[in-house]
Image 1 (cartoon, rainbow over the protein chains, first blue to last red):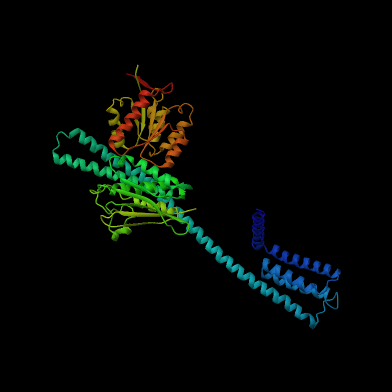
Image 2: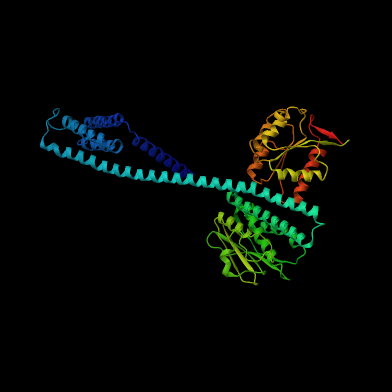
Length: 377
Length: 151
């Protein structure tokens, strides 16, 4: 706990220091920058005098070089030259023999050289820093631009699904409505062929309605926020099977439910995953006299749980396995098995949003197995 | 004694108007329906302005409101009604194609009395409209000052 708060204080302090550093770097007014240079030199001078008073020897040079370094780092090249000159003058006048005179002897030239070289070294570091900062700023601006573009694209997509929801449904409702009315008004005068056409119109419109609903539901999953909690998969599977009871009550399905772990995810989304997988299994085992469906947990890799749903139903050709999870992709004809082809796409989308993966194995007429993995924590 | 409350329908799509009226007619609920074609016209009716300046100033027993409307949209009409002391007692039922949670949330926040998504299936649509009509125009006791006809 203390370690943590200590760390936090350190981080806070570092952040404050960085902010201060940045503030100083952003000072652009020449008066302030040259003033900073003079102030640094004055402080260094005062410090050197004080130290000398307390009989510290030969401290003037390090103190002045430090002041030059600080000036160069924060205030730039012009103030740096000023700092070097000021340091030189002060050093010459107060700290070299003969004291209190501007006489320059050959012995003092190396000091002048040290001050100037030091200024140049720090200035080149400052230049490197500035270049890095500039490229960082460029990258940041680029990133901000990209984020804005993404947001705009997202908004557009949202507006698109919104208008699909509003505008595509209305004409469809009208087609259905008028076709129903027509059927009611004139079914007595229509012959068999015409009645069949009417039935086709109605059926096709209803199908389009469910396709639109499915597509909207699918896009909603992408936009909805996932509220992750610990989910007991065992309970969830039993709940889903109970809800499927309507479709399974007059069929003798052999359910096998293995031990299922607790995993971490959005409960309602995971329920949708299981509903899709289990109702698929129920649907595709319809052709079997003794349908068998098994749900269990396979050995998952590091920190993942892998759940499988296997059935002895119609299966599929492994050649088309990569089409299985696509939107509106179907591997069976509509007359054989009904459905819009959105179920497995929904499963994949939800599992991917949870950071897991999906896969499937199967063979024609040999049943199919669907796997999905989820993070444990 | 049975009475029939007046239904104010706000709907811009003529097909929807016809289908809704057909559904109401089947159950003899269409006699007291007033149709307005956009939000502006609906507000004109409620405030007895413009072409409705001559009507008696009673409120409808229920308002069937579409959300996507030309000029003033449904949510604005709803907002206007629910922030007016005289109008806010009128029960408002949103009858829309939109299943969007955003619309639903906004409508309920503004104080809508019911939110019904128009079913795509015609039988379900007829059922929904009939039940709405029966409930709001016959069963429900509207607030005092609502227009109703004795049967």
